[in-house]
Amino acid sequence: MYKYGFIKKNRKGEWLVLSEKESRDVMSIQKTREAAEAYLVKSKRPFELIHLNSELTAIKYSEEIKGGIGDNFDIAQIPKEELNKGLTVEREHSPHKDIQLDIVKDHEQEALELTGEPNYYEYLEEAENKMKEDGNAE
Image 1 (spheres, helix red, strand yellow):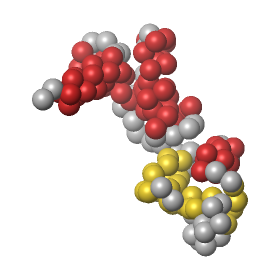
Image 2 (image 1 turned 60 degrees about the vertical axis):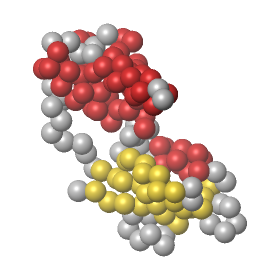
Image 3 (image 1 turned 60 degrees about the horizontal axis):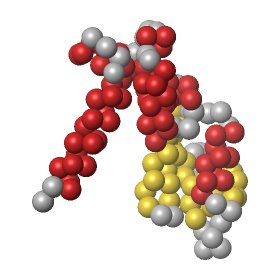
């Protein structure tokens, strides 16, 4: 079950963190979007940020992430460089390391099943570089 809140810029240029219970309830007022996001991280509650536009961000709260294919994956199987790449990439989904790690484990389990090695982010990097090449070719 997901609940939503918002980070919204008001007319004074302040960033409001609005409650998931009532989007009119202000939980915090911050000077920057980054400070508003940092306020959420302190709550230690799992969430994902969805940037809707320059003045509005949705906060998608989840009580728990369940049922990923990597739930039983041993992270010791992941080379350190690969693990660090994964955690960096998955920051786009959540600032919480435990959620980032859950996502990494799911992707690495998938890569292990398909290629025999936990190398998802190696393939991701290759795919992104190929897209950049294709985008620059005219």
